[in-house]
View 1 (cartoon, rainbow, N blue to C red):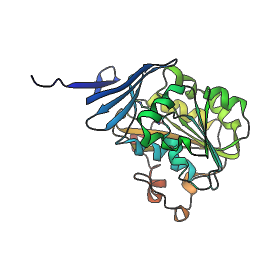
View 2: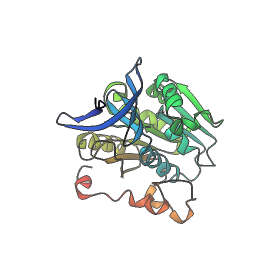
View 3: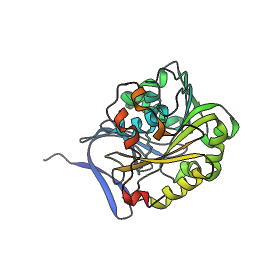
Length: 277
Ligand code: AG3
């Protein structure tokens, strides 16, 4: 008898699915906050899925993790204290710790089980979580930023989609708290979904951030396993403008997507995206 084929589909929109062949279901759990699965896919290697949405895969995680980390960290001239809100797989922490000036990187994750499953099944991504410069805090990111003032040089919001546990991470009150939680020359970046499918969200976030931070910028990258592949990041900054960075001074670090030539080019937007904001 021919071997049975198993396929996983993320329903990216009510009318569109993203399907890949899986060779093994490595782990599944219903955590306090969400449904979690680690799948072995043929095309992308291991994949982390939360509430049916692909979060990261071994093959393309570098695109997202490098984009969300190195743009803010090379925009701030001396990032010493950095916080990641969400990001329990540890991919952003791994990228942050490639910067020698970073003294401490905090991972503020609400769901302990995401960290545990990633440590066990996605070691390539979670490997830096045991570094002595990394500190894991299990708590609600909204509570954490509201309780800590004037503390960080850079904050990176690596959330899930704006449904379920992440809804509050896309609200005006959260961006105000992020502003207060940053030092006087701090900056932050949040992942803000697909400019192809989530135009209202991007517009709302951009204008909310713009009403709070003196400098607000949108940049794009390509992430093959996310809806439409085209992905947006919104940056809010108190002082440093990513477009003013002297790219000749950017240190070469080990990356596969980010490079100094790309730093400003990422902010050049297609016309239909310019029209969103
Ligand atoms: N966080 C953003 C995932 C969004 C994907 N959305 C989707 N597949 N519908 C990724 C976490 C990686 N550290």
